[in-house]
Length: 385
Image (cartoon, rainbow, N blue to C red):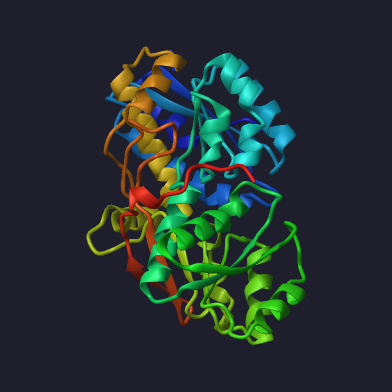
């Protein structure tokens, strides 16, 4: 595994004369290759943008330079554990872990024994900190919260019967189970369910079952993501399913908007949208100026959020804080302004309180449906499949 120190951090050190004794070393054990690279890659772009911005201003508080040490875990759980241990051994005070609860949780023993706070780039399973313990944090709206928002929207549109499609292979792909809980709590009915295997290419049997229902369900909900989701929605529409399809944040990617007519009128939850004069609009402008291209996914902004959360925690804990003090500072953060929204950890178990956005797809373009606050009374408790 290669060790990479971000160029912007090294440049800031040279410009300010700061020595490496005045640095905050952050270990980045993420998937730059393999299936999860679709998500971790954009997150790290945004993280580096945020870190370079902080370092160009002299570092955190004008004195503490951030040093990123990056290792590619190749979308593998065992490699995540190995990389986490190596990074701790190299002096990392904070760890950043992959965008899925399962590989992130592979580092539990390292995180717990070293007492180093760890944040997943974009895992959204509310079981992540519950299983991972006091030092494990998420950086994305929880699956149960996202499902509450999308189910409430569906029910309010008069969509009262649902069919869910989920995979038991991952905590993330169980989001439809939360959706079902909320629909039933609201008075709706779940009239069918199916499971699939991660990496499954043929969804024709599931699509045919749904198409043959009379009547078809009002809504079909899944948290399938690439490469499964494109195959799934194409199979649905080819089979003649006309139901509203609701997805999750895992399809907030260029692929979804390039599928064509099959994705038209799709609705999904995500972590933000660049409304006029918003913090995310400002981030998108920075991103384009930095990388010479428009941001195509919210996961760029999520990476910038990570930089701002770590900066805020370090400011609260002080420049000489150890890992335990940084963990405590993260756990008590309130209203940190990120690229996507305000972010709060205080009073939670490691899942952030932050905005959930509903996006619709129309003619291959994003359309903001809303950014509603979920009703806390109907948010399902974290569940293991």
